Structures are given as structure tokens and as C-alpha cells.
Image 1 (tube, rainbow, N blue to C red):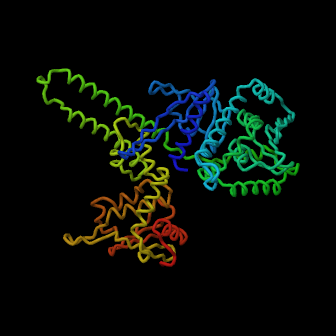
Image 2: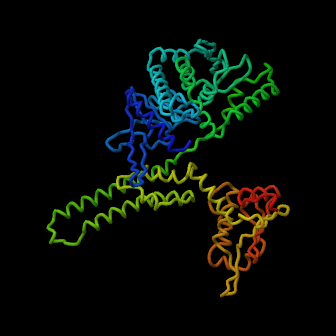
Image 3: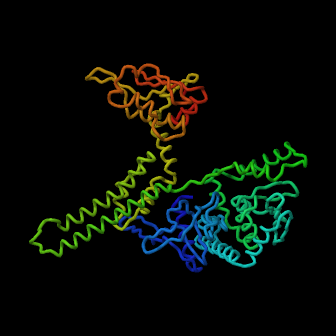
Length: 532
């Protein structure tokens, strides 16, 4: 799902949270104007409070915690959105509930002719809000607190409580919590279980299990009120799986591997202990991409603070200047000079943010296009919105990698420029040329840089420059050295053994094997076997 679609889902949820009595923070209304091609959609930070609880939706840094801005003081919170979840609730700095369902509220069944897309989305938002409210009621109730307390205090026993279709068992001996169903739960419930740290085991009749913690116990308790409302998140499940490189087939493979481990590596009791299985899954880490990092966020926030301060200073100076007799300091600052200065300040603010991301992530951003769209009232979030539109759904890193590959492929868009012999790849990219005036050969720095960037990404997965190759071949003096046309053995690369430029413009790259040569040629140069 595109970032702007996610933002729209959050805003729709925010409206209903307000109706339900939540206090929301960081809302900006839609300021788009189609008449002047200005795009600034409504957005919400994802932070809300009610009855001492803090709800956080799609929040991936702590910069807003306790922040005082625009006459609002954000609540304190200690956690970003957990892995494989899109929302969580905190109480006194501790996560007491979490789950998915946010982005599914902005999807609909396009084959459903009976219910309009708007109504489908509205129904999903209502179900999501009802789910949050029921969770809050459960967390607020004295019975819930007493239940959790008593369960935590019991040791060496197994306690069982029946729900509508699930059995919750605390296994104190194993320090585990088990959930079993009277019938197979839907995929949405399965995803909820996994997002809350539960894993499947087919032994003892089949059950879901996890280590005991306040979070897993609270989630198990919430099944008694929540299970009916967890059925509507189908579209988001696919999205969350895609974002985290996890899909149902992968999970089936994991379960199959679990079964093989548990059947082939039997202990005295014929199965592994829960502690053994827990330790295996403790080593698994699934990461979530963030829109921007904390450092990026702080930089953008600082730029906006400086920008607004400078605008206010200029406005004050201009107003004071106008109070003085026009004859005294005539021409010091005309209205045109004033407006021109404000315009240049705005442009500098936008450029600073764009250049920051251009230089850090090596991506192409059309800052002039953003400058022409935004107004003086725009903030760094508006700049980011337009940057992400240009990223076309990619993250900064993904966009940088795509541009590196596209740049090198452009040089070899005709198949006859690429040939592979064993572990050697020969590229005819006109990397060298003869200066007709000075009668000397020189490397084309632009083309050499492009192929070096591709080699670095292929070899290390990094979008940084390879200093070894850059220092040897790039720069005005280096590009003219005769030794450039001798074979050079690389010292810092793992997959590339040597490179050699030829005066006829070709480049030969020797890889550690044919497999690497073919992989680089295919992925970075557009090579196809029939072109060999």
C-alpha cells in the first residue's frame, strides 16, 4: 500500500476516534488546491490519548513523545509501533495491547456491487474503532486487572479459562501461555496471533504458544472480547506480509520445519521442551521499514523551526520599518524586496531538506517541482509528502538502488554490448576515448562512476562509493593515467577479482566465478542469455 493511502487510512480513523472521546495530536487538515496544482493532503501523527492510555498508530520514532508544538503537548510514550503490528496502546510507558487492521480500513472489495467503496471503508473503520474501544474497556476493568494479577502470581500449576471458541492455558512450569481453538481460526486471527508473539505447534492436539509476558497475557485475555472483531483485516494481512517479507507459504514452511525439528531431534520425553523452541524463535528478527529515521526527522524538524523563526523575524523587521517615515530610509526594503526575501527563504528551506536526502541516500529528487507546489505555510511534512510522491512507493534505499541499476542498464540497453566468458564479463560502454586535440586517452568519469556504483552495490549491498576504485580511476589527473589500461586486482571487493579498461572503450571485469558474472550482468546491465 502506498504511503499516502496509509495516511488516508489513519486520518479516517482519527475522525472516528474523536467521536469516541479520544484526544488526538498532530492533525493537519487538507490544504490541497487543484486550481493551482497544490497537493497537501490531511494527515495525522497517529497519537491519541483517553483515560490515561496512549494509542499509537503507525508511529516509528519517539520524536513526538512529550513534544510541545503548536500549543499542544504530546503525551509521553516509550515504544514505537511493534514489529508486524500497525498499532499499540501504552499505559505508564508499557505496551498493554497491539494489533493490525489500520490499513485494511482503506481497502474495499471492488467486485462488491451491492455496497459502495465508501460504505465498505466506513464499516471497516467502525469495526476498528469498536475493537479499540472494547480493548480499552477490558484494560480499564477491575476484573481484567485482577485476572492478570492472579495469573501472574500462580506458580507450578496449569490454569484454564474457556472463551467462546478459544481455550487459554497458563503453563507456569514452562513459563508459557497456550491458546487452542475448537476449530481452525481464520487467517486474520492467525496473523494476529503471530504479531503478538505466538507460534504454532501441532503437538498435544495443536496449540498456539508464547512466553509469558504482560503483553501476551493481555492479548490472550482480549481474545474473549476481540475475536469477533478480528475478521475484517484480510487486505492488510497481505500488505503486512509484503512489508515484512513474510507470506503464508513462508509461514507454512516454518511450521513444517518446526515439525521436522520436533520429530527428528526427540528428547527423552519424545518432544523438545517449550524453552528449546522459544530459544529458536528468539533468534528470529523481522524488521519494519520506517518512513524516515529519527535523525532524518530531527533534521527536518530543525529546518522547519529555523525557517519559521526567520520568517517571523523578517515580518517583524518589515513591520517596524514601515512605521518609520518613508522619507527617512526610503529604498531600504521595498515590498518587492520583502516578498523576494521571503520567497528565497522558503526555497532555501525546501532545498535544504531535499539536498539532505539527495546527499544521504543518493537519490534523485526534483526540488524545483516541490518549490513550485508549496506555499509559505508549508512545513517539513509537506516537503516529505511530495518527496515520497516522487519516490513512487519506494523507500529511499530502494529508490537509490533502483537508480543505480537503471543508470548502468542504460549504458548497455543493446545486448551486443555485453559478453561473458567464464568468470569474465566484457562490457562495451565507451568507458575510454581519445582526445583528438591532445592525442591522449582518457576515461569517461561519468560512465566509470556509474559502473563502479553498480559493482559496489552488487559486491557489498551498499549505496556508498568504493573509495579504492574512486581514488585510482576518478578525478581529472587519474582519468588520464596510462596505467588505467593495465589489469588491476581489487583489494576491498569480495566478488570482484580484477578489472581492466581497454583503449577501445571496453571494460573487462573478472569475478570469482561465472555465477557472479552472470548475476551482475543480468541484474545491473540488463543481460539476457540469448544476447551472448
